[in-house]
Figure (cartoon, rainbow, N blue to C red):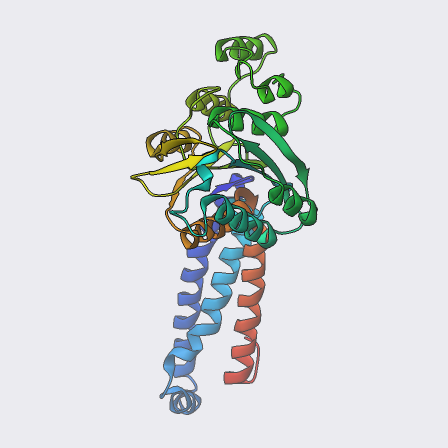
Length: 347
């Protein structure tokens, strides 16, 4: 905890002085009671069962003073609050391997249903965008608060060949940062899948005066990438993850399917699909996010429930002087109330 006006903390030196003053007053009161011994006996008889009561109201007043002095110094603390202006990009794998049925009824259907449930649980102020990637990446839905449009975009997925996980990340970043110079049309093409090298991208950033920020420090947006296979084409996902990390964007990765993989057939060809956990974990680590494995539809729903909770709150350094002032006021009221209840006076 830090204080905006730390110089006022010197006033806390008054607190021990008040304790000494209270002890002195008690001794003086005891000496004065000797001259009126008959009154002292009456008071002792009344307070004999609960002698501690006489000290509770002064103690509460002392604590109230400490709280109010701390409030005057304007304390700042990191607390968890509802996020503001949050944008979430769902980058979803629509490659042919999502036909596999090791996740019931199949991977793509389970992913679609979990994504729709995730969107339904989000607060309305959170914008969601959808990127679909296979051999190329396409922006299926611009970030919006309209849940109906998002559901339509998810239901319209068409499975394709190839898995360009890096392109999915890059297109998600291009959606979050439209002025960053990423050629969305080129990324969506099927020819080279990599119109420029990452070195060229970084050189362009340097020419614009861009300075990398702390990974995970951009709290206004996040990317959730769901995939079930290995990258077969396009931008290296680890290079794309570095590009995201330099802008502070967290990329949460979700691996769908069994670790041993499965052989599937489609339009006369067959392939074995295996989850590339190593790369997905590396992407999450590089961007200060997390990796989740979903081997079943139930696992996938739980992953999205967890992400929904984490993405709708954020930790911010906030002034909490009001909380200390409130605590001080409540302590004053408690001290006065107990004094009236026990002794019939405020003293």
